[in-house]
Length: 125
Image 1 (cartoon, rainbow, N blue to C red):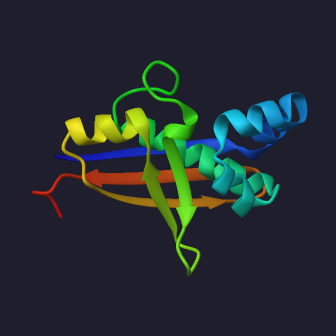
Image 2 (tube, rainbow, N blue to C red):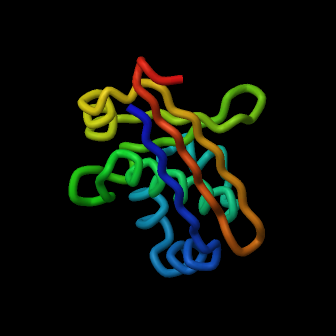
């Protein structure tokens, strides 16, 4: 199986949500590791938000009905490359779909953030 997901998020929207809801939004959407890595950088948080949406699309579901925001986590390796860690329902659903390998890419400007994911099963490259 091969599946992809993509999401484009407006940085201003994420900033507005953070301004309006503060820690309530931040703690609901982002894991502690994500918050520490981003260190308040809105563009970095928007990129992670876009990846979470893209992963949900690749899994064929939305956030809320089946998945929670924190079921999908973006961490960085020692060189800064973003990597995906799935937890709880996201991990279960990926396993049920036979998705074992994930490649993610995120980028942002001052106004937009994009997240792109590709997931494959063991028989795909």
